[in-house]
Amino acid sequence: MFRADDDGRCRPGDRLIRSADRRAAAEDLPPVLAITAPDDPDWVVSTFVSGAPRTVTAENKGTFTETWDGLDDNFMPVPPGNYGVKGIFMPAEVWQPDGKFHSLRANYLGGPNALMPKRGLREQGPFIKGDQCAPGMGDIAVGPDGVAIFYWKFLENAENAYRVDLNLPLGPEQLLGGFGSGGTGGGDYATTDGRTVWCVAPSDALVHLDGWEGRFIYPPFRYRADQKPFGSDNMIRRNVTLTAGLVTGLAAWQPDASSTALLFVAERGRMVVVDKYNNLDIYAESPKERVNLLRVLNGDTAVELSRVPVAEPTALVVANDRLYLLEKRDGGFTVRHGKPPADGKLDAVTWTKPLPLTGLRDPRDLAVDSLGNYYVADAAINHILCFAADGKLERTLGRLERQPEGGYDPNSFMEPIRAAASVNGHPTASSFTTGATASAPTTASPSTRNHRSISICPGPTTPSSAIASTMHPAHGRSKRSGTTSTPPA
Image 1: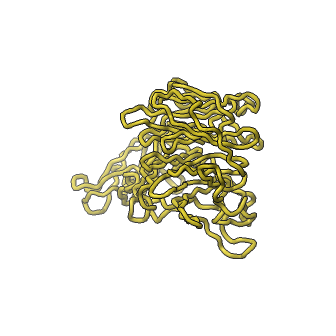
Image 2: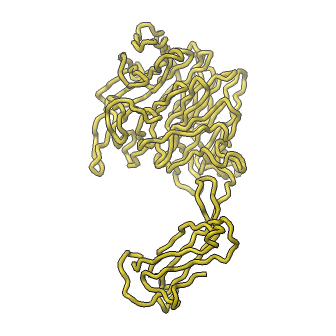
Image 3: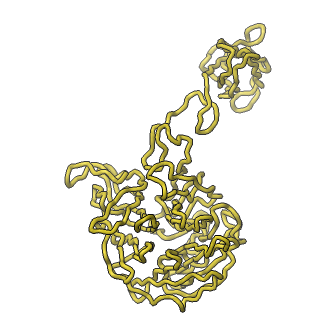
């Protein structure tokens, strides 16, 4: 119950005593107390206590004193006079996910992908969370320890560069947590040596204006996910390293356990200011001014150790203690590789000759397995092409060159942009896709995103078991067949 002082009326400065007619036990009771007009209890003058937790103990026996300061809800003094008071309270308990008292508590039921906790199992997380302002993931990288980095294009007010242990069975135990973004949000490239995670921000997907594809709201930069300094430039994050050209590849390599890791960065066209938006400089890759460099940086300090000129770089990866580079030259695409130098002094003269890879149109990423086979993600043809070490095309992953209009084919990709290989008994290619072209009957041209992992095994068939997949809004009833199609779980 609630009562005012002796005469039963409430005036500014009066003490309000709340008595909980309950057992004297430790229990939290968050009250809400409001001052009302004397003749109308629905006219609230001031809500001066709102959800403030009070704990019933044997000493206080559930009686508490609250004081109204005589101000209304606009913090203006009210005229002297008589006022009413009303209030409520509800029992509360600690909600384990945030460790705070709540009267109403949600029960976890499940999530849309295999990395989400299951009911009664790891309900405390970690979770993949955040406001996905830019669609889809930007990159996936697998370290030599089999732990992958899932890097989203932009997760606002959250972590990013989530660590996922591919050595564990499919499930929430794989998710090891992420890194605080430090204001960067996300980007298109990440890599790891199994100890440190490096990233590039931002993503061009942050600019949501028609005709502005491939533009950036600030110049790209490299940073360490653990928020340790990595250069002396200051952007939305301090102590980073600005890039001269558009980054098209990022890879890391540690010669041995006692050595400093090396970071390899492929840069293509120079980043230039092309427009303004709300007084912000808008950057894009220059179609004429080319950087076309492969840089080698000290992984701890960002100091540049060496650089070599390259053709139009398209993708970069370290595998089998070798550095592989995919380039565009003479209207086609080639791959070459060499032994990374332990001292960081790169010499491309010792590399293999460029090996042509046919059938590519717009390759975005390259993966190499333990046998030296190549896996190239090509968004334009909606396939991942698998080449033997000698450059022969051996298989094509993904059935259709685009998702069917008004439907969803679970055996086809949605514009694959990244691929990564993790050796665990047999070659494995983990890939995810972004930028679906399918549209649902009830949705006009949705911008949908999906990511999946598939196992590439020797033999005539290709199993396709998914590690993780976001929900695909475009899946559902197909116009062509009238049946329900479901994306990989």
